[in-house]
Length: 288
Image (spheres, rainbow, N blue to C red):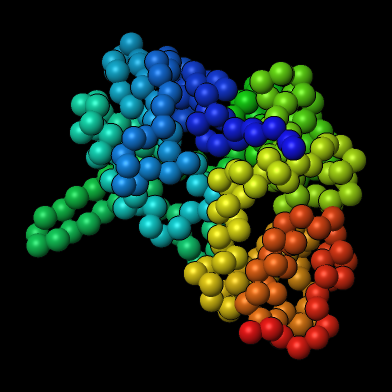
């Protein structure tokens, strides 16, 4: 059995907390005093990481980190609640940061604040947004920024074999980073041919199934169990991994029932090629 690996947000940020807080705040004088997961029981998730930071100019404050697989319209309200609860609990000012890994669905704008007006009263909470697809992969591997190394394939300019190999070399050179190879492979599968990935790194699905990001991708396909939304989620994953989905595939997917779609969604994350996925499609009648 493969050993359990912690590849969640807290582990990644804890690799180099000073480098992380300096990068997200864009202030070289900021240092990390402590890293801990949020303890707000009613909203806490794997992607919440709270850092007690310090700056000679500003004193002590909190850096609130939310690493989100894909932005959704509920994030502004969540960030507002997250920051308010942290400030109340620790009596320190908060600097909220939302990191989005993959681009949202078409037509979903990424906003940088929560605003609300009710009965003449107004509230507003700003937070910093970092979209990883806008971050230069070359910058991450040259610094390097250890927390972002596993995400190199989905960064700007990171979708090349040479860049992925460079990130992999950096991970393998550090004993503390080696178990992040699987996470790098996971995101590499969104942009590279699976055969290439298999040639340059190992692929451990046992470890990745314990990752919060794997769970979120799987949940995107489930979408509360509705067949049409599962079909849409499956098409989205196929498009991300293999480029455009062949038009002839659409009618075949339309004939599939909910159970088939869920099984194929999991397969779409792991098969080595689109041809291998097509070979898994059932030829019979759709199942209920």
